Length: 230
Ligand code: ADP
Ligand code: MG
Image (cartoon, rainbow, N blue to C red; front, side, top):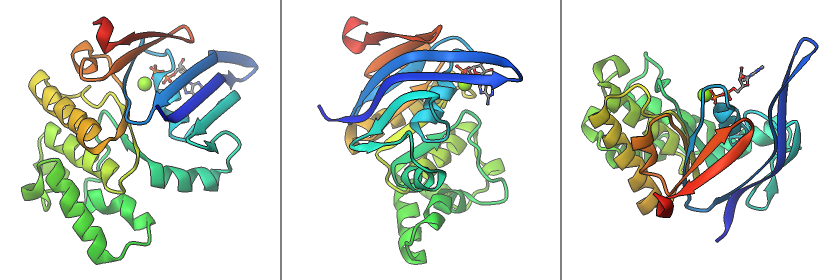
């Protein structure tokens, strides 16, 4: 199968003062087109760092990251920003919606970076809100929505520019079991029916079961389990 991402011998360390803090060394990973990966591991193991490298927000200290036939390491900030806007949507634990914008305006935000005219933007926003089941909440402000509904708005925002990849950092971390299952069912639908490649950090084994495979990151190394082993 074709790969969306190929990570080769990724080394990442942060420096704090004179101290060098290694996060991982020689990490390799292939992410297939249409993959759904749950990324687990102890707090501080580098899950968010890895997600940020896949999204072109952070860079490896050494090694190569390819997205399809493009090298991401070595891209300029401007190139990465353009690449990200086109190819990646982010979903966070605490939704990160703008409180003074309604649901439709929040979802529209990524489209303001494109050349789409206002009518096309509004049509795409409406379609995306419908996909996440919130067509009737488009004029609601975040404070007027439940946690699960806010996360749906955030997923719509991540999806509205039709990226190939969704990067989700503990998307159900702030939700109760039932709402978490609704959000996971939705992510699974986006993966299965719309073919989105999803990489999701989670602490929740129940949420991870919706993915096709689970990677455990610990002490800078991966331990993998696929659905077939479960
Ligand atoms: P996780 O998401 O698995 O909890 P992170 O990727 O957030 O882990 O962090 C991994 C390690 O890298 C932690 O020890 C954290 O303190 C460190 N770290 C993360 N970002 C930075 C940074 N910008 N500068 C220095 N250290 C960082
Ligand atoms: Mg994290």
